[in-house]
Picture 1 (tube, rainbow, N blue to C red):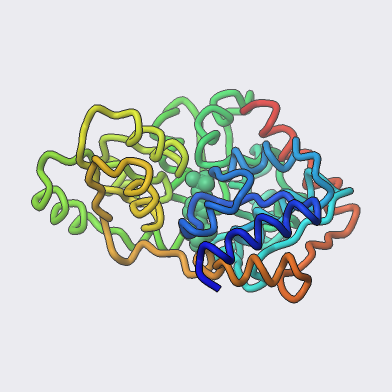
Picture 2 (picture 1 turned 90 degrees about the vertical axis):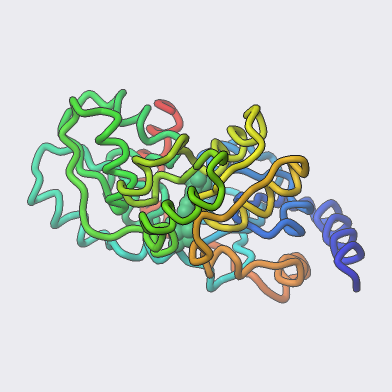
Length: 304
Ligand code: 13P
Ligand code: SF4
C-alpha cells in the first residue's frame, strides 16, 4: 500500500472499531495525520481524561499510555509500540521515591509525568513541561523534591527562586545531548533565527534561548511569531512538523543528536497492526496502583 492508502485504511478501521488515536507531537508526520488528537503530554492527559471512545490507541511512549489508563480505567488503552519506553522515566523506581521521602521528610514529591505508574503512585503531584512552573508556584509547600528530570527541575527553580527545589541526577538522553557548542554553531550559522528550546535541555542551553516551552508551546510560538527563522532545540520531529505547518518559515535543528529512538518506534504499519489486533499492547495496571497514581495526576489537572 502507499502511505496514503495505508492512512485511509487506518482511518476506516479506527472509525469501524470506535478507536480514538492520540499522538504525541514527537510522532512522525504521517502518524500525526491519522490521529484524532495531537498534543504535548499535558494536552494528551486532558484528552485521555475527557475522551468518550471505548478504546484509546496511544502513539507515543509507555508512560503516556499508562497515564491514559490511570485517567480512564474503564477504557481499553493500547500502546502502539510495546518497546517504546522513556529512558528518563526508567531512571527512578517506586523504591527510590520511598527512600528519597525518608531523606527529604516534609517535602512535596513533584513527579514529571515522564515516570512509571508506580512512581506516580508514590508522588504528591505530577507536572508536565507545560504545567511545571504554574503547579510549583501554586504548591503551598516551599520545599519541593522534583523527580526525575534535573533540567526541568532547575528550569522551574530559576522561574521560582522563592521555592526550595531539590533535584536528582538523571535527565532525557536526547535533550541532554545538546551542548553549548551546538548553540554557538547554530547561532553563528543563522544569526537572525530565534532559539526555541524544551526545558529538558541543560541550563547552559535554556539560558541562551529566546523561548523555553513544551512541544506544543514551541510549536505555537513559532506559528504565531512574526520572525521567519527558528533554531529548534527539542526532538527533531518538531523541526520537521513546523516545516509542514509553516512552509514560509525556516526551521533548523539545534543538534542532529536530539532524536528519541522510543518515540520514533511507531510508524503507520505499527498503528495498522495494532488496530487489526496483530500488534501493540493493552495496558493493564493493578487497581491499587491506578487508584494511588490518579491522585497526583488529578492534582495536576486541577492546578494546571
Ligand atoms: P512535552 O511535555 O513537551 O510533551 O514533552 C514530553 C517529552 O517526553 C519531552 O521529551
Ligand atoms: Fe523520554 Fe526524552 Fe524520549 Fe521524551 S524525548 S520520551 S523524555 S527519552
